[in-house]
Image 1 (cartoon, rainbow, N blue to C red):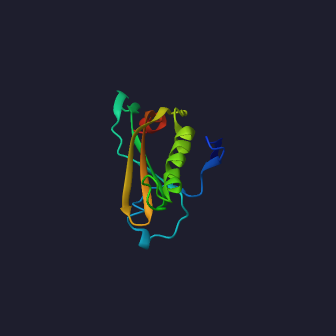
Image 2 (image 1 turned 45 degrees about the vertical axis):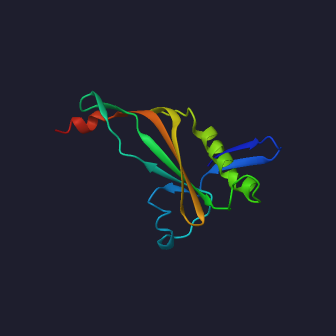
Image 3 (image 1 turned 90 degrees about the vertical axis):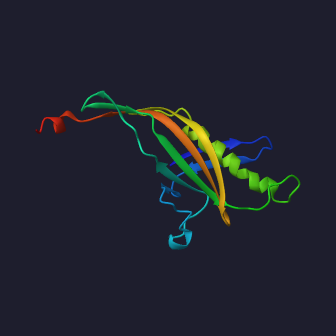
Length: 151
């Protein structure tokens, strides 16, 4: 589990944990009636198709894939100026910032530069709100030479 705690301008402490309610995206929101129930907020990860560029043919490849995070929360109501539910309704954006703080600039053994490139909000799910945060990074893939030497 990765978690992050922070205090906002009003002194409220927020914690953000990416665990348990995270899963691979399978159009979960679209088929909610057919799905086993899941807690919210939930984060589903979608790996978009990857276009590989050959650096060393048959061995080393590079790509800049897109990774979509589908952040699903309960719809709490009207967020227009002066509405009673405005403050609660806008808290979802604090959650998105918290997730971004966990992911921005991360790097690993085979990837670098995880960065936010697009945000989408989807209100088409009745009592749910889906925010899609699209990240991109650079990835290196090395094919194990043991597989190449079998032929």
